[in-house]
Image (tube, rainbow, N blue to C red):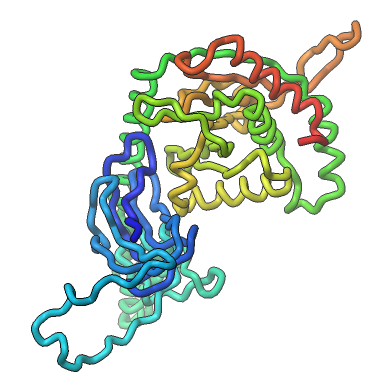
Length: 400
């Protein structure tokens, strides 16, 4: 038997609220399959299982907040014998009983379900516009608008002039949404305060010649449809991942007082959320992905992060984080390390600067890369080697 527990989805997460079971006792589950949705201060997270078998029993009802590590359910692994049923026998257990009819499962994204709860809309009354009829946030918003307009329409029909006697008041702002944003800021504050309190940061920066990378990217994108074009951000992330192979001590996390170097390179990407706040979910095995695969994974991650539909492993697995404020025109960014990681890499915007090449001063596209690192884990010499390795990989974009 394997316990399915409330996961830790952040360094300072102490508890989570079970929102929904996507599987019921008796259902088969496969390793990596999503079986539950958990609410945290930052997102509604789809939680996967890490073993295959049969969901034997669940111990926590939806809507319950429980500490991290609490057993939510138990899974009978493949090859294990079924649980004894004698302990579930009760007086009258042998009497015939009617078999309950299982209602069809509602296809709705976690963020749409949360929005429906905030707006007081019954998801069962909504026709979904997503794949397979899946209900999305825009469907919930449309249903809420339609409901708000219904009283005014009815009044207009009853009025002799055909117009409403009084205009319908605008819907007040959603308090739960404001509460979510406030909770996210508290979670970020706790994590960053812990980081600056416990981690002895040091910082290095390096300006990187991007002329080869920019020229290669322009030529590469000319032969691609718009939807498949590559962004410079994909090159940055891949260069960081490859550099970690050569400076592996930065691909590590603290587990209590023990530093553990990870084998898999899972680069976390800092993503700004609409309305404020940010999350930094992981792209798994980043170094093994082609640029096409990486670009697809990045677009998917940003989309799901901003619709509050991330997976547990994406929040718990990052081994280093990349952050960029380049789209805001910021030339340099020195990040604060996300515990329990030991480093964060920052990239600014691409700018054109005078550059000396072969004795000539020429205009050159450059980017400023920074590294914030944990001085308990590494020193300036190795950190400088890491930034230089990123630079070297960006000079060979066709090899990324």
